Length: 152
Length: 152
Image 1 (cartoon, one colour):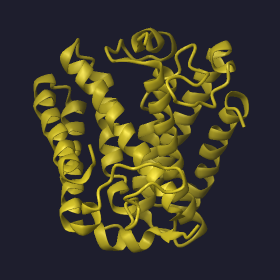
Image 2 (cartoon, rainbow over the protein chains, first blue to last red):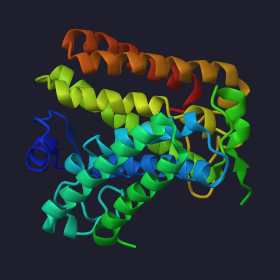
Image 3 (spheres, rainbow over the protein chains, first blue to last red):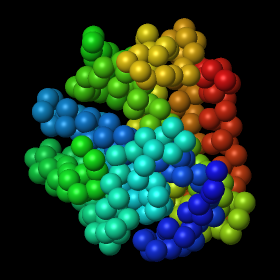
Image 4 (cartoon, rainbow over the protein chains, first blue to last red):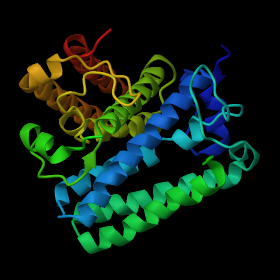
């Protein structure tokens, strides 16, 4: 299987320097789905706290996890052109628009990181009302990208 | 499908307070595999930097992601008894020993978090030699758990 040098993708989309990691396309799909599911799980924990009794420590840990994943470079390095179809048994819901509108995709990824960083800051401070408001912004940031770049 | 209250698991294994999130067993398996794959991807990035040219910023971001995932409560909340077999199409390599030796499993999870936190600290400081040494400790921590609790 042809290998894709992540560096080529990273160099074009983020401010990160060159990475040396090489990944097969199916591994890119696997890892990006893992990162996004990891975000989803942690968002679910925060939502459960907002809707139920609020545990400051658990929300802070979950918000930190969302921010770390949003900043991990997964949008920049794991969506190489051609990975908008099933490869090596790894299914994907990525639309071809990811590669047709890379600037928009990059901007939405950056917006998620920005909102997630703010959520982590508010969660660490423990203000439940502020966390609730900011959680909505992060969730909308997820949805904005899904609407345009993820198949239903 | 019977739902399992994560709180019951969390209360027994971590110092975290009660969580309200409820998850189906297959979702637990899905999310824990996602978290572990997310760790694996980020460990791979750090390894590539150690073996190739070292990018301080990329290593710091990746080490922060490993630490956030190791501290996310995934070992504590996503390994409910009975989830050592395929459920709802979600395969797992978890061995029954996870539930037979919960204290040991908990201790190995805590050891990973401790080593990952140290790695994140060293990576943020940018000392490549120190990161290389500590990376080995984190990798051994992963292996210690896989040896006893993960099927080949």
